[in-house]
Image (cartoon, rainbow, N blue to C red; front, side):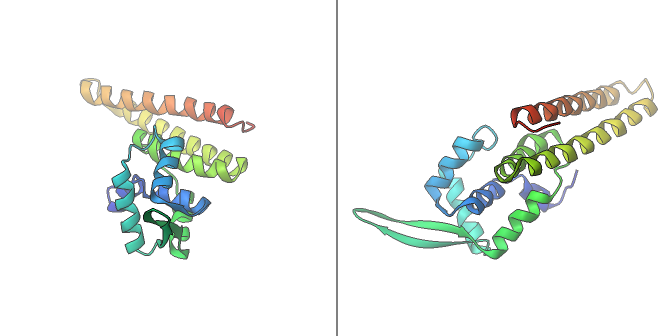
Length: 184
């Protein structure tokens, strides 16, 4: 599992916000509502966190905001992706997730949401790639378990748990195909 800051950022809701803006420009409140509605059990983000992330993304040049006046209400900022922001999102969308349970639960599900919004084929390809990567990791862990001395009880228990978690993810990935109506 990568340990650099790019890995940490990939588990940030900033990519979900970039993805929502890739679909259409929006206001901070609307983006927060979309996040809650579509990915609320994946990302637990407050309204203030959304605004802070939007401010950071604008400072970094990934989005741009324009002020829109409203009659009898405070002005609102409408955000849209810049070319750099679209490139950042597209790069993230095409990057494999890895086999960490948390990364699959958060990052892969978010990627799959945006992939499915584009096409069944992209979602299918993403599920296929994640399944292959996860199966390969299960096999790698099984080989490690075979080579581990039996007296290393806690190391063995830890590996067995990881194997079972990843095996259940493979089953879940197959269920994703059914839920998303993707032919197998």
